[in-house]
Image (cartoon, rainbow, N blue to C red):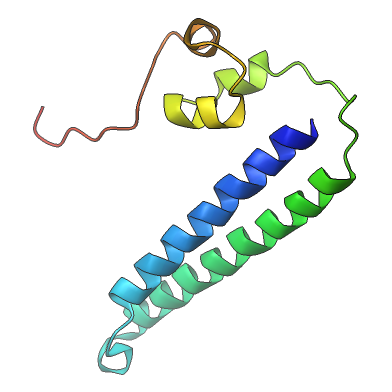
Length: 114
């Protein structure tokens, strides 16, 4: 359980970094934009802060968690559609176990014209 919590914390930390990159990309000359733009930029910043805080929070819980705690993950993993994310969250499970729950192996690729 502790390893799973640490994995989720790391995923959130990575998302916080990606969101911060987005913030830097769109946050230039913000004083020249309208109120909606400024509010959106502030929302990205707030999202970054929340993701970072949740990551730190879960990492602290993971450090305190007992390795003997067991949780049946099949149902929870079945809600995750991104196969790479499933593997990162539960590396011990094989591909068949990971995709058996949802019948799909969505790798997250976006097809705009397919």
